[in-house]
Image (cartoon, rainbow, N blue to C red; front, side, top):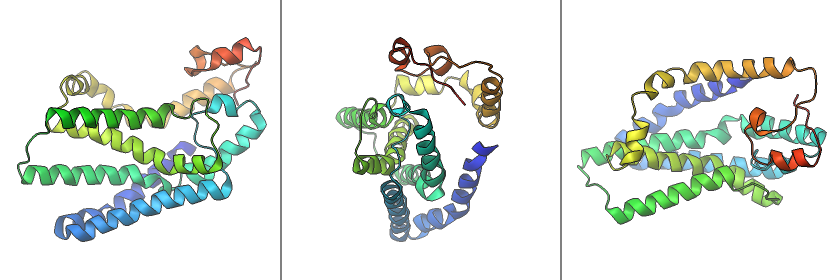
Length: 241
């Protein structure tokens, strides 16, 4: 169960969280200093590791990078082992969650007013732009090593801030239809299954692909990934192993 690497990360984050939460509660300046320190460690380590080991910038442009399968598998292995699973490169979203929780606590204490319409519009535009850039910004882009280093350093943090905005406006009652959709009661039973699905779904995937007796054509049905039409039309087939 190699995908259980994140359980180790999550446990480490949970153990050190009192250091941040207690200091934020009792000595806010010290707490903010600790948050800044951990943010800096995460960003700097992500940048340096990517630059030092010449790592790829995630999977956003896999269609272009995977043309040479053997080389790409080596690049992906290095990316996974040296960057993707390390707690010091993954802690930034966890810190964003704690920072958001503390900010909501302080707003409730101070009976803060709701945001005005202009602030909400700007917030939605910035949050949407950042999260979409994190997801699709690499598509068909050939990044330099420095650009890849910046992307790996800021990608998780940017996406977490985008989600934090959605959580913030939903909790403060300013998300409108978005909150209605996300709060739909039909999601509740599915939400109870997410962790179980996380633990089991790779087994299903591995069993399926390991049972195949021929090469698999890269298409929408088996990959749900854009760009496969170009590969299919070129007459090339991709072996999934």
